Structures are given as C-alpha cells and as structure tokens.
Length: 176
Image (tube, rainbow, N blue to C red; front, top):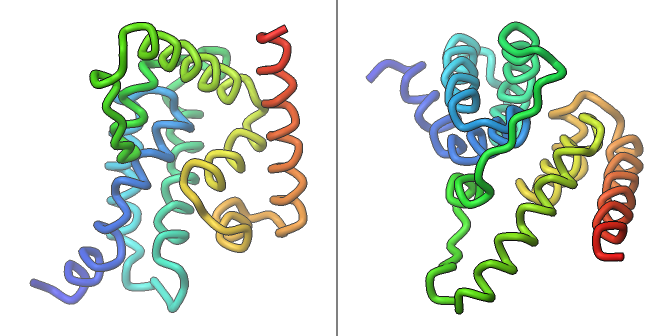
C-alpha cells in the first residue's frame, strides 16, 4: 500500500461515521450526505500529503463541512428543506437504541419527541444548527469546532448558547 493510502486509511477512515453524521445533518438527506462524504473523501485523499500534526477528526470534519456547503450550493435550491426519518440519522450516528423493546405507546411518544427535536434543530439558522450539531451530536470540543468552522472560540460559545436558547424556546412553545 502506498504511503498516501496508508495515511488516508489511518487519518480519514476512522472518522467516516462522524463525517456521514455531519453531512446528514447539514444536507438533511441520506442520498445527498452519501454524495457529500464521497466528494469529501476525494478531497481528503488529494490533500492527505499536506495533513499536518492536527486533530484528524477535526480535519476530516472541516473537509466534510466545506464540501457540504459547496455541494449544496451547486446541487440544491436553498429554499428546499428535506427532513427524513430521525431513526436513520440515529443509526448513522451509531445510536444503539432499541425502540422495539419499548411499549407501543412509549415508542410513539419517543418518535414524536425525536421528530419535534429534529424539526426544531432543522429550523435553526445554519450557523447555529451547525455549531449545535458539532458540539452536542458529534461531541467536538470548542477549539475543534472553531477550527472546523473557521470562527473564534468565543463565537462558537455564543452560537452554541443562542442555538440552545432558541431550541428550548421552540420546544417550549410546542409544549404550551
């Protein structure tokens, strides 16, 4: 195996699940997310020789983020919003929830809650949604999110706080 292929396998491949989860949240569509991750992998392979001593997960997610925005501008009308099944997102993100073990009533309530949460997240402005997903879904630290999004850590913190406030307000309105 060539040096670049080995490096790609060590740096990029361990983070493909996270890459897909991020692409899925940004694109809100399984098929588009797959296309985005494929394009991001090509970009990562082309740039693997320039990979330095930085956080590999952050590097991969930066490429996915940039690829997603480029891909979405080229392939999708910005007014179109697609939201698929929440369970698919959970499976892609590696969630190990067994809804079948719950009672039918509990399962329906959980599905309705998950759908409301996903819809509330999808309704957030792009920069808030992206920051919230990177922190609360992907589990990245503030420094890595700042690197991925190209904004200062203070901006990451304020976007996250605003996203959480908006999310709580939206979910609170629905319960009232």
